[in-house]
Image (tube, rainbow, N blue to C red; front, side, top):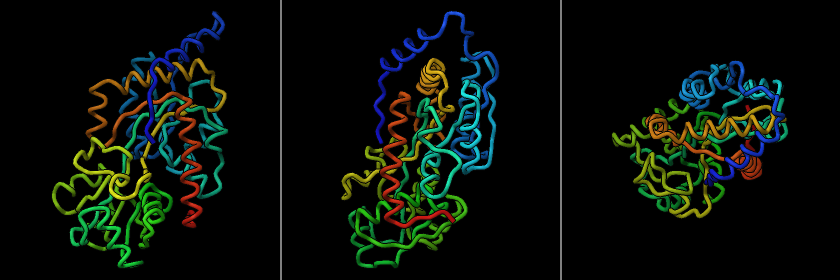
Length: 320
């Protein structure tokens, strides 16, 4: 899921889109912008709140955070909003995974104009210290010797940890049992108490417990080593070539939003998240900043829906 950033392309898109506007068109924005996102504390919410003050200053209009319950509601609201650039969506991979699990009142491809990716974070394969494995290959061998005996946790059906584990099972040819908890924090507590034996946990949530020795980390799920956990190898380089799951978050607008507005937001948000102090703030909460062109973001959504959709179908995953 590596995103190549082509600054020159974004600049050309911005120039061309602005040139297409009539000279009499008013400057955008001329009033506050509402950004709909998940409930407080979620990745979408944290991302939006960290960007909103500076983005408000850059655009000359207030950027207002509108929190809604996680699930389909934030995307449903934005999909139905006027395509004028004044209602945006900040959301994570749940935007395109949820419709693969259940009927959703929106289409991730048809109903949105992607603006840019903003953050990414891998999961990390962690085990309880009593598990007799210190590498991915040793863990695979252990799991094959004990089919169906090991339990793994997640923060719910269809979440990143669940998908990461099911992809691992399929590629490694192993079997372990899924236990769904109400939140990644609860799942980590269960792992530390040896109620479950492994987890594909969010890096930020697991890092303190890895450092304290209460959990043993084996690898990260990205294709490249992560700056968040620089000493860990990747799963792909540790015995499962091609393995990859990464949590991403980005900003989108309703479909048919004018290209000039998309291009302006892409450029301004990209400039903002590339600032060193902004990158440092995100890094401090376990997120790496990233950017993309709108086209790259759109391709990512389509590609991931195909790839993850196969994992979901093969594993028979269904929403509760």
